[in-house]
Length: 281
Ligand code: 13P
Image 1 (spheres, rainbow, N blue to C red):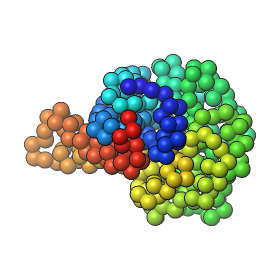
Image 2 (image 1 turned 60 degrees about the vertical axis):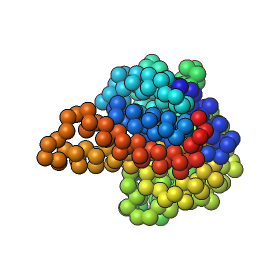
Image 3 (image 1 turned 30 degrees about the vertical axis):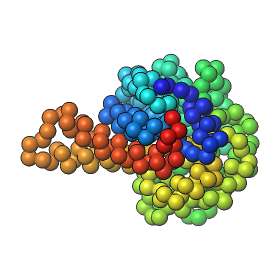
């Protein structure tokens, strides 16, 4: 069933578990996430990245919404990392009311202005807004320590940011990165705790692929109630395709797609168990 992101996250926040938000690109991804959530009796989110929105357009949004409505467990559909007002307007017109308005590449004041404008717009549609303070990058390898620190979420600025923008959820930067971690991940839990103590809205951690189980568990303890997962599912999809396409007699498309769904589904199941959302549908 399709329900609001607000209900999903505030329930998770109150009951100390987290919702998995899984990036999907096509029918196979959607099937994999929904099958995993149904098998584990878990709520979850389907998440569309702007690149994926650009490619899949309104049919992809319609697919996600229809699949979420038909699911036997609670689902919402979310637009990930959207830094363009036009993308957000297009998504709203298509019926997506859960949006990440991402102004994190802007200077602080401009981030506030962009996020506040988008929040006002999305709230007029009865929707939900996630925004980011700090700046998440693909890899931190080339940054000096002060540069790295300056990209992390400041716990005092977080209060101001939430108050000024009226967002519904805050994505934090505490050492998490998108994509592969090229060195063992180091999350700043002291910073996370300080942010949690300062703001009441649900906290989101991007870049959940490749984080050790202990860090996921500790993040939930310190108040994270939404994890974004992309790289690991995409990896399972690509590996499955590569393995099966190299067989002497490549299978027909349907079994090929089904095998890819099964591979992605296994990744999603593991994450749902780790996020402690199993049985919470
Ligand atoms: P990963 O690709 O590292 O899982 O991150 C996904 C994400 O944060 C999407 O917003």
